Image 1 (cartoon, rainbow, N blue to C red):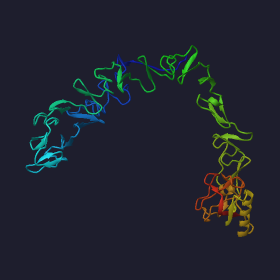
Image 2: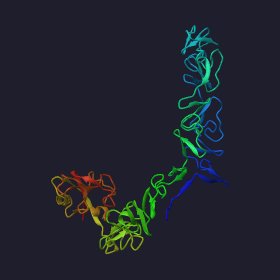
Image 3: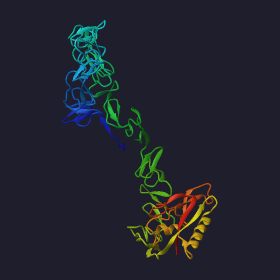
Image 4: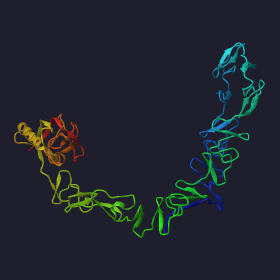
Length: 450
């Protein structure tokens, strides 16, 4: 049976020996972990490998976002590199660096003449000997790093998110020795993820009975662990499908001819749309008689100046500027002569395309006797001698049909607005690229030629 799947076993070869997943042989650590001396660690939070392997944080510090930072208990601030209680410290009263005057004490962050009930004068500062970790029980009795003062006795205090397990603060969400609860270790091939011991599988694989499986392609575990495919089936996309003959692919529901099937062209998820067919696993256009497919477009190579005589660069050429494609051959175009601009009033709500064209013709005939308005094709493609480089008529400029249609409009007599050239813009060299497509009602200009 041609299965085409990969299975990653928990036993991998690391060097010359077999090790379980987690041996961290260069790239086997789960996402977010890094290999340090053969172990997968989180260098963002591991105080023994903070930021990089081997960088151990000093006592009283924790690793946060890959940097060693001093850990102060709640209500304390770091002043000159020391955790300080600014509510009672004589030299940092209320804020770092603010000292009380001679004969004064620091009480609740303010300087006062005497300590209130429940506080003792310790070296010029009012201290609560029941809760002050730097004067715990007696003045000057400092609790060790990581301990808090409770009832005048130093006890372990863990920061938010950590739990006291046998005298150590641990993260039960990620600690392999205390996963989910104190003294609940994970196995050697497991990591602690969200407080649960789990196998560390690469992306795209799932742990099934201590083996990492690709549920999209594994016929013994297709779609979910322990769900095998029947004889003669393959696992594709997590579904058991018939094993298909050559040239066919197992697509949802059936074997498909991916070389010729328009709905499954080249692959199960690729369908040909519009007027195209599937040939050899590729979607290609089907052109009407007389047209040739050039770069995915059906083209009349007898009149297309970009593919004259055949597809450009294959059997045909692109005609130079000023030449047209006539019967598959590039021929020079006789230049029209620019006479000037004429203005007229457009209203697609009352004028059809023919009415608008007649208005342009009349405007040119009046402004320049014997002239006519230029067509849309002529503005884009023809040689017009003397034509300015840009539309400097001061108006949105239009041209005669055909190829004049702009955006659809339900209120327009002809069902659409017209293409036009924005004032000061250069002349378009294609249709509709370079044209504005929503000229409907206003004073317009046109080019008069003869």
